[in-house]
Image (cartoon, helix red, strand yellow):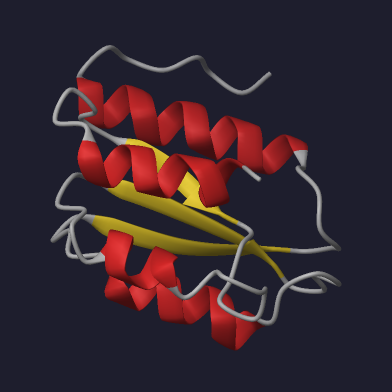
Length: 108
């Protein structure tokens, strides 16, 4: 649900400087509007998806990713079904920290 609510927010709030999104695609009802929102996003974005996501197709997720207008965007696919993994959390921390210039927490 983070992308369903977060992408419209990121697209319309200039205070947001970097974002981690993903695990949502256009295969879901009423999700096509997210493509339009993505076209308004020019900040750095890490877009995460899962290899065996049972809720969203890879094609639908890729459609949102490709619509992002950011010159600094990364698409990372993780193993497994829909739901966060430890690697995703660490990658999100690293991405946000590097783009905000605040350093990152090392992996233990």
